[in-house]
Length: 502
Image (cartoon, rainbow, N blue to C red):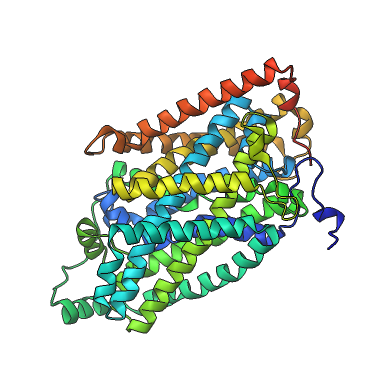
């Protein structure tokens, strides 16, 4: 079959520009949304004790730095539409070392979270389905360690296969599932605003004989509020997946920035409505009390209000969200590895592209292997939020450097700066980038402070030391590979002064 010139494999990379605007936006939406929307807004009551009734305001605050980071990505993506977006933007606009360290941090954090999501989300939702159907023995069986790990690994490698099949197959798989995800998730939004807390109290009394305490507004504590906003910031992580697919985007100068904007606005609106709907019908006091005792999900909470069939439909929506999350995130992390290898700071064989499918097959398989480690780590560590915290640290650093790259790009690489097509008014670019630097730095400090002061069983359950160890490993890899390039007589400065081949 003959492809158009736009879709031809590039002689420089082998990647094919086959992802359209909808496919790119779906990549960002599914990476951002995922199944965590069914868990994080409620389990945050355990992770940040005392947030109480202030979850929604904290979510709105978290949206501000995320929007600023998204603008930085859109600006840089319009000028540098290649695979491995965040690595490319920082290495060309700031410094090669910082580009690699930031993107390695991102790759590690997201790879681990792919594993965490596979392990932590799958079984609770399947258990909720079994309980809703009255299959208590099945629910108990699913909680066995070997079953839980086996299911997580099976799902993960299924979606590794989806990525290996090619960009068009990936797009045809992702878009219908995204539409179904929104349709099923809409049940929660409609039901949440249809019932009130009195309905939930009556259902709880009838089913469990439990009397619900009066709901009230919790005291406001600024430190707790900011800590919760830093955690909820993770809800917006994922739009950068669009940038990583820059080497496979059709009409990239237009579609990459537009897809980033669509993803952030769509997910932000959906996430807020979803969370508001649940807390409208379920008192935060009940959510907070239950979160301390067990893992809770939106389907589990709504099982009190809806007949079993509707509860199963909500769980199906969560399962679809999970299915969407994994292939989109795998695409993102694999393209980072591909971009490193293309520049020569990772083994060149990782940039191998399948001659027929146009996919970076080695990078995809290695990313699946790293995510598998995340599954095993979740099983033995037993802490959902450890993986999330590592990802938040990684992405805060990454987004911070993207804002800095917007500031430094005209001085560092004026030729590429002239290619910017989004917010071309330079004073406005600088103002938004500096505001992003300020807010993201604040969130990073809060997040690290909360992590280092958390009461954990051992030092390695703090995400910050783990992240620093990863950065040390990244630095060692970078300087080793850079040394090899120099010894081979490669003009390293020339590599990082221009974009990789189309």
